[in-house]
Length: 583
Image (tube, rainbow, N blue to C red; front, side, top):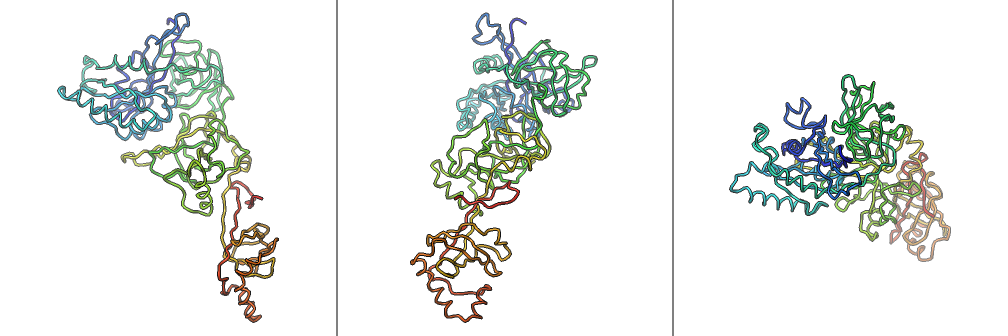
């Protein structure tokens, strides 16, 4: 091999039967062990069931003589188009530098094409749209049909980050799957030229711990077990030890290949096969391989969250989603939270999580079309949000994800939440949100060891009425608590009177949920005047009557009701469930 090959990964995504595998075959010169529907189930059903990999090599555009990098190896990642296999597509998208969205020119955008476009927006920076099967268009009307579909696709891309992406017509397998191989594909050399012009050589970083995303694992008689995948970070050399963290197994690299070519080392972005001995391939279908002890298994995580606009449902706290991290997809329960209301407009931070800050609990992810209905804490959130310069929604939101089973993944990796149990035949987007894993919780007992340090609070607001005055420094309140509430827990908390005074809950009063409030600064003459009708009525009552009234019977109200409001924070993960008021 003259000079080193620079590897880039191009994803081939699209709806089922759009001709992705045929396109990859037409483009490829070297098929990897996983390419072109080798699985018996795939051939039987005529659909791709797993990620397929193949490659072609072209001269490196703009390569400088003497640098050693003279060839560009384009690795094609053929992703399945079948709806139930979308978790495989998500896994594939995370190793892709450029995406080819394959569209059946006779059908246009379909459900999975739209989902692939959404994944592309999250995971890729560049897109090429391939209008396939142009041979099925009537020759006389072919160009007009291509032009019409090109305009449609341009309109579809208009509101995405891929606006203005190139669109190219091809016929990867003229005559369909059963046609003889003598039929030459159309538009493939033009597509290769287009890909060369669109591919920007990614900056590869050889430093950092070795991490590889494995997508296939199989044994070769007399050799050992081969794990094939894409290097996500770092470098690897012959003789190095690698760990399969999910199994806590360490193995030595016996040999390595890139598309059947033996190599002695490989770096970030390379497509690689690693051969190890004495390892059962059935134990690892796909997952991660890394430098020993560089990855950890986590039971929960703090992630930044961004809702996918095409998802029609709400993102609610306590709801379960399919969470994809790396090549693993597991169920996870969500708890959403935002900055404190005064910090709604803070600049987002996507590489760390600040445990020293306080955060506001949310019943659901806040977005313009789904602001929460008024709950106990909702009024305050809405009011504060209205005062926020940036509008009602915070610029960044987070979630605590609690996994149903432990996952192994690197810090700061892409996270995608979806509802893969939704009906695959309905025309709806099942991808709900995406984000970045900011902090993984390794301790199995994280609810005790970590969560109390996570200061997520609920704002609680209670409203009641002043029933009557006892003296210049004391009033009786009601309608703030239920009859069965233990008022002793609230003693010492501050309440605000609508007349302006601040009071402190002193004690329970009787058995009906009433309570005594001490007013340290005393009632103002104006407040006493408002409350006078109550005093007069009381003076007319006999002693026995007063006792009955204290037990909860109706008594005349002030002419103008005086309301009480009690506000406090309760930290979600505080084991003592304390109520905290800001000074």
